[in-house]
Image 1 (tube, rainbow, N blue to C red):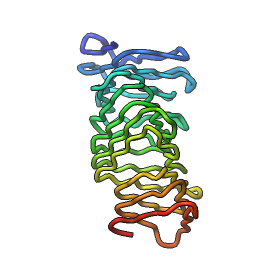
Image 2 (image 1 turned 90 degrees about the vertical axis):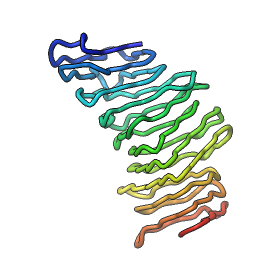
Image 3 (image 1 turned 45 degrees about the vertical axis):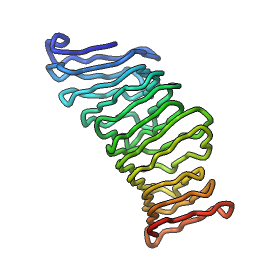
Length: 235
């Protein structure tokens, strides 16, 4: 476990990760003073967290590499404390067999993609912003959205392989807004609450079910002829 608190910094100091792979159990900045910074020397460096992450508002979070949450036990929390995740075209991975994480606040990373590889992620009604989302493998994994609103600015929602995948859409909204071309929605035959397509899109891969499906006027939408898309309440 790594703790930064009131005894850690006598000035506005920077903790710099300068190795290719940094590992810790939990990382907790609670109580740290003097507005510290977490940074890295290279976007190729990675941070692997095997417990919880707790940031504070009075710091600068400037780790620009890939981040891996790799706990193999449940009960872990993630608090970003309003900090956007700064990595450009990087990834945040949830990859722990038997692991479980619950978001405590919004997870904003408009230039970063999220991938649920293994374990259980509960977004807990928080707002999510990212480029793309993927969870397409045969590992045991669970995604619980609650009332979260997801905003995807990249080109893909990818859940094409749903073996051992438990998906709880709750009352969530997934807004797909790729400005540079078609958005590819690989639903994998899951049941979604509200999905909004703000630009051109293809709905592919399986007999997907939507409680509400919103298509933007003036855009082009392509449906996979190998699947049936079911709208329960509103188109």
